[in-house]
Length: 175
Image (cartoon, rainbow, N blue to C red):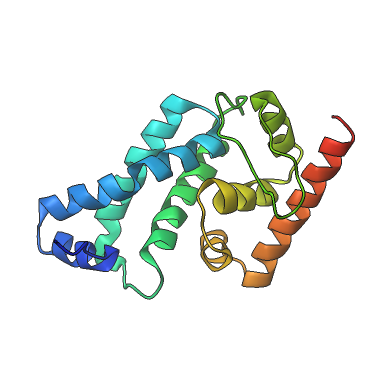
């Protein structure tokens, strides 16, 4: 059975001109970056463009990647900056067919209604919304969230915890 190469192994091979390694890296992360961008810009077409821009920027700046932090956090940081730039340019659109946000450990009921997810995400600050999306939508660790958001670990944890409190309160109030 063939061993799955690590992200850093793929990066090394890409630097040597291995196109198959680039394809593997894109295949590994394309969908998750697409959904991350979709949650940030609320528009599928623009999210697809931002995802492609993320990988173009990654490959363009790959010589500058030193491997000092986890590759996944590095990639999400690129996507984050592109989404921030995009948010400065366009009007915010409502979420469509958003995946469910679930948190059984913090006592929130499962959300089935997509418009309720849209509403609950909109009541959060941009930092809280991003932290929740990274934690529950992208399954990043708090450490990875801190790296992507440029804050310390405790701040990342606090943003998620406070966002969940706000969302829980909004659910209890029945909107």
